[in-house]
Length: 294
Image (cartoon, rainbow, N blue to C red; front, top):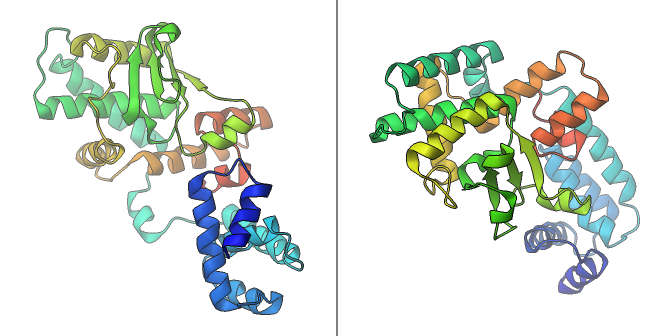
């Protein structure tokens, strides 16, 4: 099997270590099913898998290796996955937390009222932990409603100008540009292949003003926007505050589902779809549509 991996590396030198290891596990699984990688035995196995995306991905390394007879199987599984994506509905757990975009916006307005009432973004205000978590939730939702990006708000570092960026492999908020510059995120390799790194996402003036108030209050320069917060901790803050203000738990992924679902109801143009894909850090339209609920 290691000779197969060597051949995959030779044919796809751009693959990450993670991708190579994924292909190794796929081949290991398929060799257990059929030591000779018999087409009929493999076909029977993958067609019986419940998760069609997993089945399709298992076949991918066989295509790279140019094993005969698997292209048709892959194409059929890809078509099945496309049909699944275009007709998917929320899981039971997701259904409990699905809400409308209008209700999310109303929730953010309620957060804004509390932040304003208690003057929580004053330059001289010393926030306690509860107040800081509310401000972080309010700012995060305000940004995510206009830029439904992945969980990278948690790892943004603050600089005033582009020239101040030292490590181009990190993610930054550049104050003078009121823009987020992303170089390290899940789909970065797909963007890199298209010479689209760093990915620039520009905030509205309203959201930029919020971020700038928070930066000034906390005297942030060169460091993390949200105090070296992990992505999971940041998401937990969103879950807790959406439950408090709305009664449902809306994390980053669920918000992306809600935004794209309502976006697609408008039957957007191709240009609008491409712009939304950029905001959501997506290249593949099929992956993009997987966030849509009917």
